[in-house]
Amino acid sequence: MCGIVAYIGDQRPGPILFDTLKRLEYRGYDSAGVAVKSDGNIEVLKSAGRIADLEKIYQMRGSPGESMGIGHTRWATHGRPSDINAHPHTSGEIAIVHNGIIENYLELRDHLTEMGYQFSSETDSEVLAHLIHFYYKKDLLEATIKALEHVEGSYALAVLAASSPYLVCARKDSPLVLGQGKSAFYLASDVPALLPYTRDVIRMKDGEIARVYADRVEMLDAGGMPRAVEIERITWDADAAEKGGYTHFMLKEIHEQPRAIRETIAGRISEIDGEVRLDLGMSDEEIRGLERVSIIACGTSYHAGMLAKNLFARAAGLPVDVEVASEFINLQIRPRTLLLGITQSGETADTLLALKKAKTCGGRSLAITNVVGSTVTGLVDGTIYTRCGPEIGVAATKTFTSQLVAIILLAIKLGRAREHLTPDQARKMLIELTKLPGLVQRVLEKREEIRKIAESYAHAGCYFFIGRDYLYPISLEGALKMKEIAYIPSEGYAGGELKHGPLALITEKTPVVALATCGRKIQSNIKEVRARGADVVALATEGDPDIAKVASRIIELPGTRPIYSAVLCTVAVQLLAYYTANKLGLPIDKPRNLAKCVTVE
Ligand code: M6R
Image (cartoon, rainbow, N blue to C red):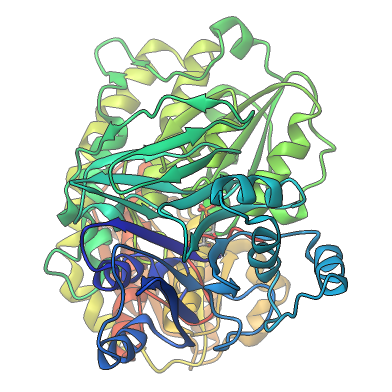
């Protein structure tokens, strides 16, 4: 996955391109490049490594460029990270930047080679530069349209030609947004990158292509017909996408969770009536007719799906299967199945592909996502937005807890429509839900206590997280956070499963985090690992009379019903992983080998 940007206007393009690219670094950061129009030519600067380093070289060269340019930050898919594979790719006077995958690039490459084109990179994207060059006579838009007719795959694309007075951009299955400024247009893979420059954005839809001048945009829809440009005013400010005084975006986003949860709930519940209002694109009668729910997701979103499994069964009497999208086989999908895709970005390739496959079996479909207008929303009958604002840290935090809250709302909605929950039961759940942001705030106030514990185990060779029922998925989530940002091998395990194998790994050097706020059974698992010499950090309910007898260290969390304590435990394990990684001095917001949004299968 990669990020692309472009600029056309009355400013020098270089500083704007570098600034917007840095805001997209979360999409990938193994190499970067820019191409700017300079004295009637195209000047290209690109290299492996970070954008800030490239920017210094650009400045040393005297910051060339006037009126327009394109830029790219890369996360390698075809071809290793290197100077030569970095974008932009050029062909004669054409330069392009591309995010996506050209599936038939080998065939196109052979064809273009036969025609005399020479390839200098190992990327799939370079074929686009040569194809457009082949068709370019006078009209860059026409050349790009003709080139894309031969292309199979996905793209967000920006094209620059030395002799063209405008830029061209196009999208299919990869995100792309235009921003309208004063005598300027900006282009980026997502909205936050544009916010320092403009709040007036145009979201490109699949199959669209645009001719972009400094003062206007001519947009063609997927059928090649001109479409009126709709400008959307973004109301959240640029600060929402900045660190806001925290050392890392991840820490900022952890602290935003009370607000994020409030936003997820806002306007959707009536505690008095025990009702949840969600636009699911389904009547209550259709909900009553459902026979099962099939959930598809990846990574952290998959853990949210696992929690939904137990909750939907209890609250709505619905059997649920949850599958990792990359392993999806559509055995359970029948016309009376509700298909639910969970994806914070709405762009995860595995999830989109599995949803497309599953949809062919009929039935209603729904997405839980954080990104308005993301690709997943075009695939499903209804969308529940989590409304968290942009999440920049690669590790999902606020988007996960908001997914959990969206799942709770959905469970109550399904439960009421199917009369599996009484109005009184729903009312009580909703009243307690409104208190959740305040409880999360109280967990955040334990940050110093959690920091000290995290730092004391920061050099552990391996971590275990154990939980049961609703807390089992959270133990997986705790282990995932520890792996991805602190690089410590970590296992999340169902407490009862320890004795079936992994107990052999437990020694006095293995810290075990026991999620112990729901039920007493976990205490026997704590005893099992204590007997093997392990230290146990228990997340326990305030005032639990027994936990001190079994655990080595205790983090007390406010008492609430089990499903909500899953959210509280999540916040505690996020902080634990954060402070561990911080102690180890690791690049928390951009962990090695990872990207925020995985748009490749
Ligand atoms: O955007 P999605 O929710 O579809 O992303 C799925 C995973 O790639 C994502 O949750 C990943 O596991 C996170 N980095 C975890 O923190």
